[in-house]
Length: 364
Length: 160
Image 1: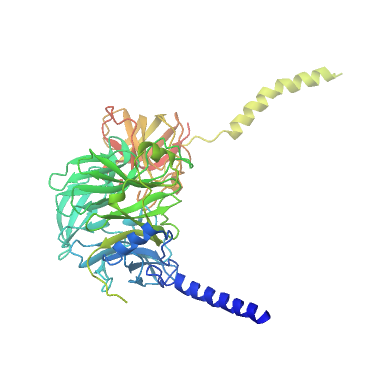
Image 2 (image 1 turned 135 degrees about the vertical axis):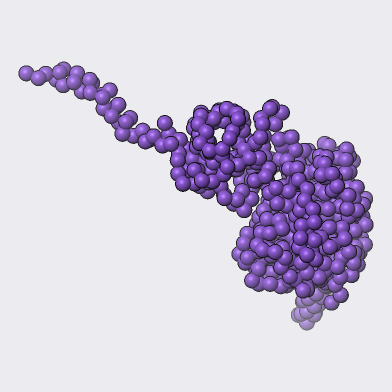
């Protein structure tokens, strides 16, 4: 009888060890140099299907805290596997990666070690860096605080940036100003559409701040997309849609001023649709996958997206599952009664993630 | 013989005098607001009275903004202003002016601690605000004829 109990005990220990090993060896759980280990947190069937669907769809790049506690740039497969630190600079903080449209180059900002990355001021701060798409050959462009809110031209040969007086287009081969356009109230988060016809940014309209606007790249004329508490716009790959975060008024929220959700608008600002919202989280950093089939974003309990701390969980969902709401979220449920409880793939902490389908990194 | 009544009467007679002296001693000294910064920064310099605060300043420390305020110009020190009523954008008005400057605002400041309707400020200004400040602007006068919106570079309190 005693021997039988010992055998049962040994079998239990062995099965425990086996379970531990296998539960930590899925495709989305990888070693990660830093605090932001990637893992799927909602392991139901739908999330697993989503994970399988996207696991080989290119790469995501994002900034996150590294082992050395500074912000570095990381890359991984969209399911969180194959993570690697692509800058690995313990003497600097790095943030705001952006692939050129041809996926050949990567632009980001490099700040002095110890600088707090402010969610609204980071585009003004530090030095602009341009590297190969895999993060190698990083070179500084200009001086500290120069080329504020720089982003790519459609052909990757110029950058678009903001000065207090105007928008400037800078030729990267000569660093000469090719063109200036009055900024017409745009004050941050400026991006050029893939087809070259439009800019989008966050600006002032009619005495109101935090409006998302579209600007005609030729005439400089502005049309508002949304004129209340909105920011972090980015272009959809079709150049006809803008993804952004917005915090509607009068939410019956559990905090003092409501939660920020992720929305998609057409370029005229006539049609605005919820992508994802969740009471208890601010949804920021939204970007669409290169085929517009998925949205990548961060969700953070603290407003600002966690830039001042260690980022926030990055998430991926299918656009075909939008509008999607997690949790009770009474304001959202009332306004979007047909919203789904969509599968959301939750990844590690990061900030301002981007997505390419190009194979800019090799598998480990 | 000096009675208690006489003492009490004299004491009560002295109270207004003592109060007046107390007020004189404690009231702040007149200050024109002039200093090296306000007289040299910006393209304009005025002494002006803050006419109103149209609504409470948003108190969300996470977000920076400029708030447009309406002033009546009392004295023009520098620059050519053609209106007696001007509109001035102040950066993060809930902060003391000597602690308000950051990467977004550039070099601004002053000794004003708090904005209060009716107070008089001596200010160095630039115009137009959009050429000097790249950030959110709350302008409750937007649909009124305001003329250019000035940007407050330096703001000192004036005590008359």
